Image 1 (cartoon, rainbow, N blue to C red):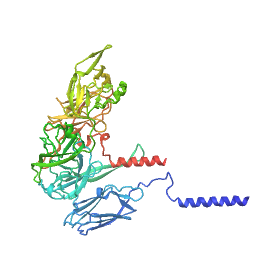
Image 2: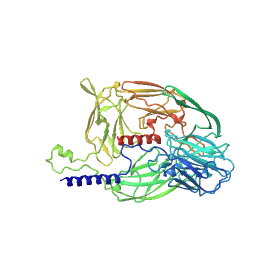
Image 3: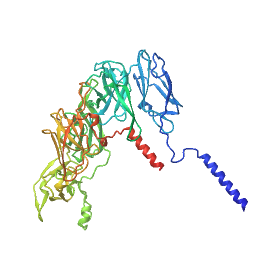
Image 4: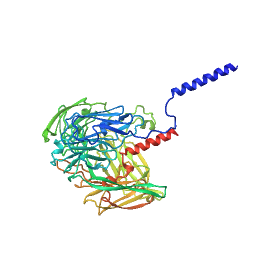
Length: 625
């Protein structure tokens, strides 16, 4: 018995030893390595002069790797041939494939691309510098790149300098010095020689360091940039304890200017006009999609049908999406429609010229029923007869609780042949009785297949809407079923109001009220320095003001060729949260804060990398617990 017990104990000890050997690693709950790699030395040394070899080697104190090297590492002057950059053990090796320029300072800005191999701790803001000449150019300029339309920081955008001050340099010559924006949209261009420069932003799609594609996002500054420096001092305080200062140490350093450049990036409007595609998903309708807006509609000629009075044309405001609803059933039942369309087309000289395309449009789906189905038996009940009838689909927007500023809308799947407005009834409840009231019924200005019922609602009124059956007919013969809906207007106490007193806006400006997703809730023009928003649902809001130079009611982009900057955008720098029955009056000086300090962090889609790392560390701590 004792022998068996001793054997069992021996086996358990062996298993524990084997498991321990197989589980070598950091115990759960142990400390994570948060120390970044340490730079030990390099060939050439940092700041070395008269170096003319293309190979660079950097040594570190631990095994390292490069994270998103193509996005984060920036070499200046920019390299037309992409350099070879790789991590090997504790080294980073760089092979520059371009010929080195004489008497030039070279900088390799690694940003935070160098991380340790285990935990990914970054060596932040690491820059390597050498010169092919007798001096190291040490000037710097810095600033921020924002999306001009919404002041969103842009990450990874190239920012470059030209000492050739001609406008054509941006479109024909590669940059002389470059930097790249970080997760906050901040950039720093290093190794600059004294002089006068123009500065540009570029999302360089083809990596040739010039603006040569209209699809590339760009930015430019109207003013020249002259780098300079000044001596500054900062203080380090050593505390004896939480209340007593031990020592204050003064540190002198060189600060480089300008350090607050703001570049507003934009994409130019693509002006080329051409037919993108044509489609006929349903037999009754075909659609043309054009690349740009047009002042006129295309001229259509039927090749196997007569096009005269054959269609109802539905188009958007830009005339770049045009649908043709075929009225004649004999025509839309044809499998293939052959036609020619004549329209203005952008040629290779960027001129609009007439063009004729010949098209064959084949129906993708089978035709829909064009008439009501017939009753099969006279003995059917009314309910069965109703179910056997195919009605015209009507999407009626009349919610049970109606906003005081809203309207009732009717949307249809096809253009309408006729609507009998006398069969539409709007009843107002007065005491206990229903009183029919007059209303306005109009076709929507933006949507051919939508009609709106307008009425001046008053708070807490009760209404009922009824529409008689067979009062609305579509062009394919179907009619509506009976519609009955009741609704009530919200009480005034349920709303809130926000009134902005605007300072510093241009003559023509409008304000967009935004939700927490940066989406537009309401839009009003600035009148007499005021932008007023009535009858808002309680919630969180921000606001954006656009200086509308051409007074067309929309934000317009810029144009480099004409040196036209995009229209200015400003953000109210706080989130407002009015409660029910509140009224907020807010003074808003749109010029008070610099643009990169205006947009509230809650609205920004581009979050700083530091925040992402903090969230990652918090997640680690939670998992360890």
